[in-house]
Image 1 (cartoon, rainbow, N blue to C red):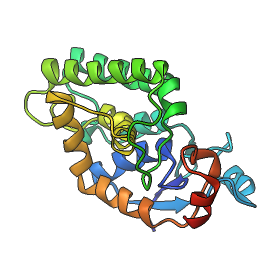
Image 2: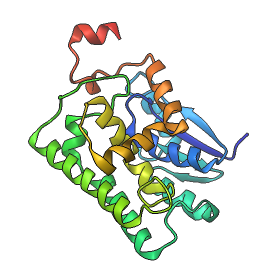
Image 3: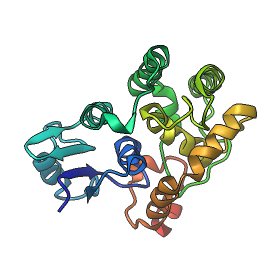
Image 4: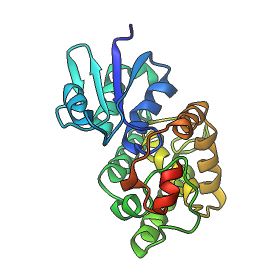
Length: 227
């Protein structure tokens, strides 16, 4: 039985769950995935047994419990320095932490206008003034990191880091809502999408039967019933 246990929500909708899950997969760390369907009878009680905040994701490592996406990633980086989950270069590492924290605490307009929905395809939807501003900032971050630190690999800082995991759900959002990308940003999004772990996550999201109506903001009631 793996020592590490990661409690996650619905793969179709739970962007926060994807982040540490992807770090674990990319790092090839052995862990047990605990799937907790959200917004169904009994889910709050189940969540409370795994997470002090009552939210996913939550990581259990023996007696240690960590219940925040970025905190989980930081914990894994500390416990497994050989995985180089942050860049080795001081300047690159500082920027990687800054852009990860910016994603962790910001982009609220993008999150609300374009909720993660792996099964959905809603091109052109969710393009509000605020979400457009957030999209512009995300693309600027990707382009800047690739230009300044991307030598030696295809990720934001060359090799895969926590920063890539933090932005992976945005790649899926851009796919769902048909956000047009060009140049380095397009290449980067394609790189993330093509990861075997991302394809595994997407496949599982497609196959989930659960439907959370609160996140299906661009479907009619009739369409939701047919899902």
